[in-house]
Image (cartoon, rainbow, N blue to C red):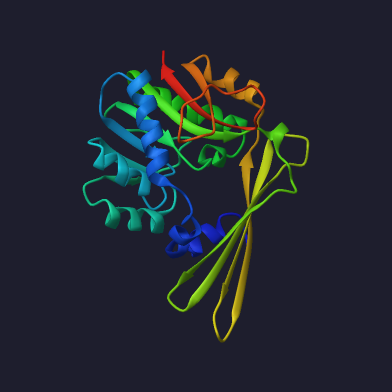
Amino acid sequence: MSANALYNDLSGYYDLMCVDIDYQAQSHCIRRLHQIFGNGGNTHLDLACGTGPHVRHFIDYGFQSCGLDINQPMLDIAAERCPEAEFIRQDMSSFAVAKPLDLITCFLYSIHYNGGLDKLQQCISHVHQALNPGGVFCFNVVAKDKINNALFVKHSTKHADDLFSFRSSWFYSGTGDMQSLKLSIEKSNASETQIWHDEHPMVAFCFADLIALLQPYFEVHMFEHDYDKIMPWDQQSGNAIVACVKI
């Protein structure tokens, strides 16, 4: 299947694919970072919001929250989950907002969906334009030089009469500014088994390069990829949470 075909065709199963994700812990951690670094405002945009679970938590925290995604079927599900919120179909590398915001988030490594370093640069610039003074941009990332191509994550879950098994892994060739997110889904029941494979091209960078892109726009803070406690990045691990304060 072509890039993003799996994402488009199986939007109805996306929440099953992410069933092991602790959306509440992720949302709470970023809310805490916003309380530490933010401007005290409560307007929020979630980039690449998918089916809207993070938006749901921010609304419940008292934010005026909205979501952006390039995939309309995902947005349709998000609108059902969060009828109070506005959801807009835009590309995060070239989006615009009607009014400046206080917090912009991008969870689940989705910042990597920018198709190259030039698109990532555009995304960062548009985020900066969309934020109020002192606004915060938070997202999580993986460093290309720390990727182990042999590692993968796998989980299974039941839905109706079907058993779904999901597997995902990063792949980086060792050169260039592109990496891949490899996905597979197996759906089985008493009568048949179906298997889908997909590979999503994603922008690759080391953390030094990312910081260099961010610093003209933001005060940059790097933290360990741990949503249960806020700790400074140890300069060694290949995953991080990034909190950027608009200059």
